[in-house]
Structures are given as structure tokens and as C-alpha cells.
Length: 389
Image 1: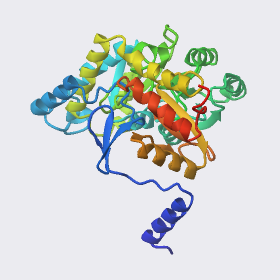
Image 2: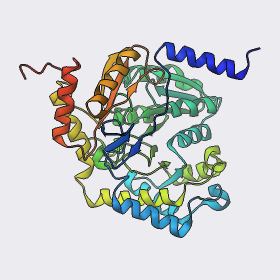
Image 3: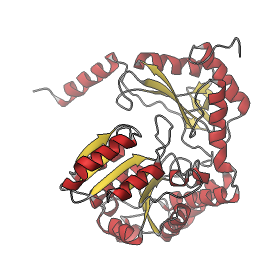
């Protein structure tokens, strides 16, 4: 039998030979834009802090005050001693933001989906998932033991066919999608998905980790287009545009009461630290005080897509598909040499042959730096040529 070390070493060699080995590099975020790595200050175009609020003085002050008053940790699970009043305040604010009756805050977005899905569906049920959903939705589906079938990305006809052929064989049906797809930056057709779900007595879950704070006037993908879609399960995170840490579900009061009683990742996890809740509350105050703030990241992304002759960005995320993992790593290294931090995304996060640079744009990115980034990428042959612009 192989020893554990031999097994691990063999796996590492295999990953390295295919340019798929991942390593952690020390990186110090100076503010919402700059990262210091290996002694160099780099302008980050790969961070999900879309509104640059994780370093806002009011947000840091709120977190610091919470630590001074309440301590660094929650102390226990929320059902034991960890249900801090700040969490209840945060849930009320999130529910109001998303137009829902109630909300439940989890320790992270991954914990949220890993807990929500198995609480609502089981082995006699059906889950239909967009093929490009985040890994935590797949994890939640596996934990549920429900029959899980993928539909082609944003393909309403395929989803409709699956609903007609499979829905009647199962007691309950859950449709799960990202609101904004984290690796491609496009939006799900949430209103159309909600209509299909209603037609077939299915429940729609949207993961709005990359939508809240930046699309739909800051309220997320359910509000894209200026009106609210009927999404009974609006999940999201506090760790991206909301500048803090944690996850949440916004839904009806009965659903939230059930989640708080039975979701294993809530019941058996320590509650969110008070500082994280206080920081998220401060971010919500800042978003409400500046209605234009939520629109800025997409405006910055659209400046970039214009410069690169790409389709207009739908979100702050713009992928540049390169192909091989080795070529994506090489492109990222070339950008780092120019003072930009852009991470190469490789399998299994994306499909084989679609390794890419995933660029994210924030409210604070200077237009001049976006223009410089586009020029560098064009020189690398990743956009239209410099001549003839």
C-alpha cells in the first residue's frame, strides 16, 4: 500500500506536470486596490472587493468597535450562545435589501449552500443546476442525495425540456443557478427562470455572491432590469461587494425558520464573529448613502470591454479565455511584470481548454490604469492590436 506521503507526492507531481498545481503566495492587501507581493506593489484586477469597502474607514471602525465590545469570536453555534444581536440586525437589513420576509446569516457562502440545499430537498427529489454553478451548489446537491441533473448554461429551452420530462417523477424540484457567474461574468436570466419554476411547481435558488452590491441597483440579480423577480431562495455572501465575511439566505419566514432549525452547517458551526456582522452593516449603510456606488464597477468593466473590442460587460467580471493552463500562467506572469495582479484560472475551476485570465473591476480602479491594462494585453496579443485603434 502507498503511504499517505507517497500518495500526496504523486498527486502533486501529476498536477505540476499539467500546470495545475496551486500554491499560496503571501499577499498583503494595502487597500481596496493594491496588493504587496514579493516586495512589489501591484494593482489588483482579481479581487472580489468590488466596492473597495473592506478598507473603508467606517467599515474598519465598526469592526474594531465590535471587537472591543463583544470580543473576537462568537463563542459557540448560533443555537447555543452565538446568536449575537448584531446578526439579527444584519438579517433584518439583508431581508429588506432583497425584498424578502426574513434572512439567515451563515459562516460563509459555501456553508450556506451546503446547508440550505440538503435542508429543502432529499433523495426522492430533483435538482436541476446550471452547468456552470459554483462548486458549493454542487456540494450541497451531493449532500442532499437528490437526483441532480445539469442543464446547459443559461439554456432555458434545455431546462424546460428537463422539467417536462423529469419533474413529474419527483416530489419536489429545486432549480439552482448563480445570479452572476463567477468565472464568466454573465448574468442568469433570473426573471425567465422564475417564470419556468412557477410553471412547473419548482423552487428557484439564486446564488448572488457576485451580484449583490453591483447589479440591480446594488440589490442583486433578482432586481436586474429594474423589477424584482419572484425568487423564493435568494442566497449570497458578505465577502465580496459587501466587504466583510459570511453568507446568507433571504426567503419567507417559514423557510428561514426551518433553515435555522435544521441546516446542519448552521446548527453545527460557530456563529459569525461580531466584527464581521458589524462590518457588513456598515457597508450596507455606505451603499444606501451613495446610490451611484453600486453602478461604478460595471461602468469600469465596460470601459475595459470597449477598449478590448469585447461584448459589453454585464457585471464587474470579464474573462479572457486563453486555452491551455500553461499559456494562462504565462500571461498572468507577464501582467505581474507590468505591475498588475491578475490570476490565471485553470481546471478544474473551468473546463479543460478554457483556462483564462479572470479580470475583476472595482469602483475605485482609475480609468488610466484600465487603459494601461488594455494596452498591455493588446501587446500580448490578447485583444485588438494597438495600431488602427
